[in-house]
Length: 79
Image (cartoon, rainbow, N blue to C red; front, side, top):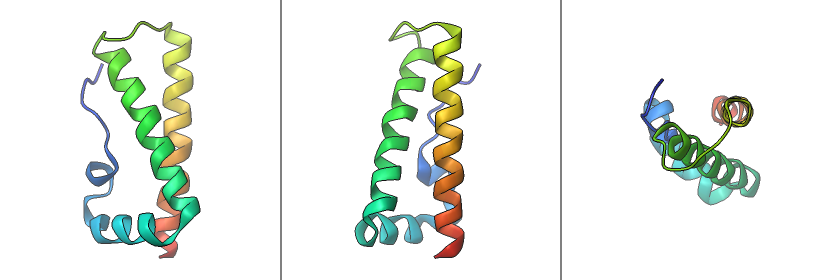
């Protein structure tokens, strides 16, 4: 089990400038990035045993994070 947060700048290190530019200029992208950050933080809290959650709840959060990451990657590739 990984206890390392999956921040967007770590997931897309080659796209740091594009991440920042899209957060500033694209409201939809900014919303996705904020939601990713919120879900990612919750996963990290659960994996670090700071917050309790069932295995099923953790898996659902991980699926949601992956879906958000896919959407973010798609927007980054179009930028």
